Length: 317
Image 1 (spheres, helix red, strand yellow):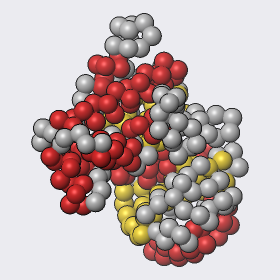
Image 2 (image 1 turned 180 degrees about the vertical axis):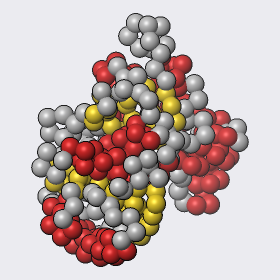
Image 3 (image 1 turned 60 degrees about the horizontal axis):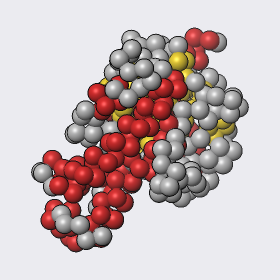
Image 4 (image 1 turned 180 degrees about the horizontal axis):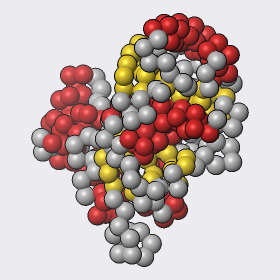
């Protein structure tokens, strides 16, 4: 009794048929028209689902969706997209339920990444976890007693928007000095460019900036690995900021484990030494040891989380 899982992001959307054991029986992806919003994607999603269900090979029993933006879980309504216009107050699940007569459930992609890792990945076997996806931005999910904690307005788990430096750089949320503003891929690239432009010496980063006209977080990791002192200093500063955010969140929620995913979170060296640093700085250090684990599902965490949520929906019907 499989389900259909959907992952809608800023650059692509993906569909998969997933078994209860987390095996992807079918998987397909296509690029998203970022500027066209829901009016462009909905008919394409319908057509692909019709084609998939017409094959009759798997007979999915529900649809689960991870969406790249805030979702009001109680009303199952997309509030907006973090990537593109045209998604305000969209009842995507209602549209699909009316057409396909299958239960449909939707949540934001960070929550789904956390549920995926909790159910099928590195968080499996723990009762409660904090999940971070550190990529272009920083998202999060909180699972307590096996259930996603969404809060009173479906906005809990925004671990990337914990302010850790009140005079820090502006964040996408409108505040200053959040974890995302200091530790995301965009933040790392910005800090590298600022450091080079201030005249600090770094042959590697300066050469890349002059050749490409810009810098990325990957450039910083690559230069760190090759021994570039400026890149190493930037990454050390980023990791210290991330540790501060982790310490605050762990002291608040007291999870059994932390799972970190995303392109930056899984980059070589990002988690090195973090577990020891964080555990040595908790309230009453030594009374507990919180493992900080690499996510194991990679790009599939959101899809598998959406599948896990769909199975939970079936089980409560």
